[in-house]
Length: 238
Image (cartoon, rainbow, N blue to C red):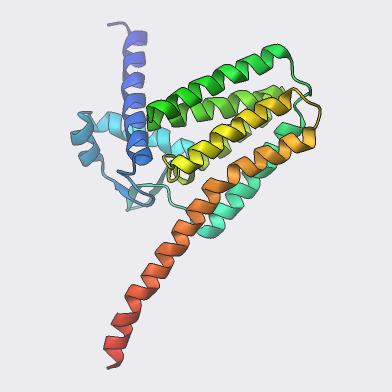
């Protein structure tokens, strides 16, 4: 085997393991903060420890996985403050990109967005969560690439990656998917007009349900934790 072919195959193996871990997150098999043990992943994915280690590094660079000294790798988990701060950044970048799209967009650009939306809707109809995630991200990257600023688009992609765990927690919600589908269609419709502010506002509002869902989940977990601690304290006092 040539060195170049070997390197490509090794890279494909690492990417495949990384995608498999992503799918476990999407399907809820791995939750925020959950430990990612190399030996367990190696056994479950039938992959070498080396490939698993490299896959975790890929996910760490994407912001999906975090690693702490002496604690190993975990699915990235965010505090409420971190979620708000991260979405402040993502909303700012999203608004700026939307405002920089020249309106009305060309018929070619609109047709390309309609094609991306058709693939997204097909994924929803087939209820294939990994494909829903992939086609949704492809839609967003394609849409904001219309701003013609590759640096801004790359920063937006980075923010999207960092919110992956937050978005995955609500990805299979039927009501949210119905809303997202309608909002995507409205975004495409606004490309044919001249109201940049309306477009930017819709794009920002489109991001917020996932943030709200994750924050409510954190609040519920904190409330449950307080409730479970209360009987223990009462028992100690008696």
